[in-house]
Image 1 (cartoon, helix red, strand yellow):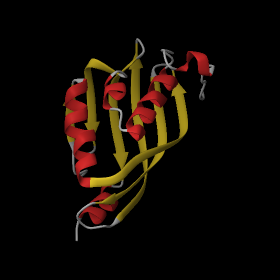
Image 2: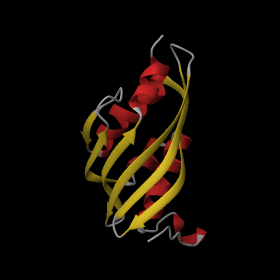
Image 3: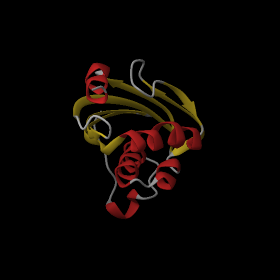
Length: 143
């Protein structure tokens, strides 16, 4: 178990679960929603944690980007999930990361550790589940 990344020449098309997940993070950080959608299965199940401002389960790549990424961009400046640790076991990828952003209405900064669990099949993300200290997010979003 551990992170196995392919050579850079193969990274853009690699079906390896860690590579697919890493492409998702890079696309998200770049604001490239088309590239992000390309990492998601047509029947993806994307769950934002209960208590998170966008809590719920979203399906379809368009459903994920319109209900999560676009809304995060509308409410927060510089929202980024800084992925730093990958644990891979077959089709399962757990990523430890850090959310950083500034809430547009309150001006408060967010800096919260997060864990993401991805399931990757056939080179696409079929499932995502978020784990985060929702109180930190709520505190940054309220005056």
